Length: 263
Image 1 (tube, rainbow, N blue to C red):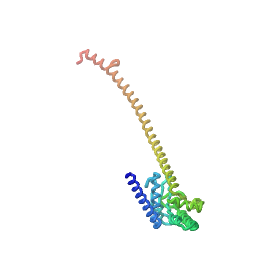
Image 2: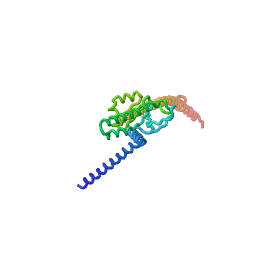
Image 3: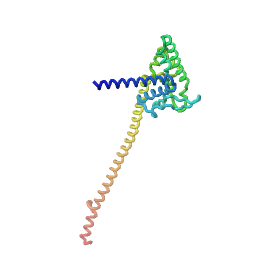
Image 4: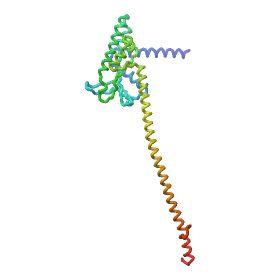
């Protein structure tokens, strides 16, 4: 079975390549905060695309917003149909999460988990302090959305503090992981679809009104033309009577002149 053997060797090479790439990605994310940020933004934008939203129409990335405290650059601004905006910031908490798996014992793992939780809470606090609703060029709702692209990392923090959602909400921050974010973005996409349908219905109503007005005007014109045709017909009949069919018409009188010898 040489074909199966070749396929098996190919799959083995592919798995090794994927594993090597994943290891290099993990090493890069652990050692470089900027790389972690870029990766989180990439995952965020990919979810926006999967949800059916279009860049430049339904969302924008890396927009600089001016406020009293300086310039702000949220990762993503999602536009809503009602002229409101959702602010989404990606926060990748990977360092302590990775350290938990290499901890020597449960006590060390629990200590690292607490540090991991404190890190996430700091992200929440930082986002909660940003007054996105008061910035120029954005009409943000009162909540800011913190995206945690590594769901396992968030679950570890949640295991240490099951009131983490409440803590974040108290700071006007909503925590989203890939699964919950995708559901949220699909709802936004459905809102846009509904908005487009409503706008199309309004356009149909407007165009229908114009069509009705034209139709009524056309009927009036036809009726006026009919009246004019009746008037013209009556004028024609009167002229024919004078010329040929009526008593003392022009033809009879002309015949009489001929009979009298007129040339």
